[in-house]
Amino acid sequence: MAEKKNNYTVDPGGRFTCKKCGVLLVKGSATFSYLDNAFPVELPVCPGCGFIYVPEDLARGKVLDVERELEDK
Ligand SMILES: [Zn+2]
Image (tube, rainbow, N blue to C red):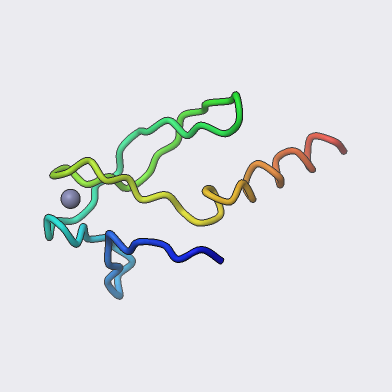
């Protein structure tokens, strides 16, 4: 597994804080691109630097795989 940069911290309450800005990430709309597809998602974003937290499942394409499996049935 590749080493990833930790641009955020997660507090016990499950809230994300941007390490760079020291502010809480807020839910915002983003567009997630996968191959030739782009779809809107709601992800925690930093209001300061624009950092977007991407869940590992989403980054790895796991979510898409699940959706595809469901569609096949
Ligand atoms: Zn930030």
